[in-house]
Length: 315
Image (cartoon, rainbow, N blue to C red; front, side, top):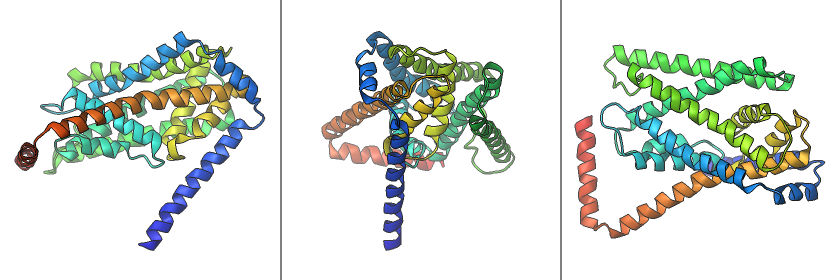
């Protein structure tokens, strides 16, 4: 038991030290008065548009997720709550627990829900793999970024093969088919929503660049999406502190943008990514607590019994 506690605290200490190191690298050689001056000159209309897109994104994700369920799907707002909570956890906790939390928040068979999350992640991985494949045709990729780019493509390919093999194995055996390949009629909708989610990430990056008055090409927004997604996907620091800032400075420096502007972008982007999902998750949490207080104990017990009975019938 003591060993586990020590191990836990060592992991926490390591992540905090990593955050400090990344912040140091991001702020090295930065003129902070210049960064503050850039932040003071924010163009609010661009910022409002970026914020609106980040509020809409969980809704689109929930809409897409709902189409992956076989038979009767969970309620839309329950899925929105699960998506927002999962994203908030992924951005807050160093070890990605958001997907696990999403599975347990859906009141139905957990294996089926886990299967839909696997397909959803496969679609997102496919988009970023396609973007990484196209990158050399649009821009001269620096050597240090080439290996991560190829890693994203390779991991997406491996993920596709593993999910495909599991789906085939479940189809020809008696095990529950918790991973189901979506029917052909749903493919256009899933493709379009995945494209919208991915492209909106590029647009948000570009809106933040315009918001801060940074003079650079639109290609910078595309490259930043790749760099930030790869960096954020890896378990790192609490709240991703230092990660956004360091990667933003690094990514924008490829386009000749000064470190002060890169740091301003990283600080603002960190806030824009975290604030919408955390706000949505907090609103749903408050509503759930209020409903819990208004629900009589006997009714809650009966509801639990009904849920248990439904689970047994499904099994």
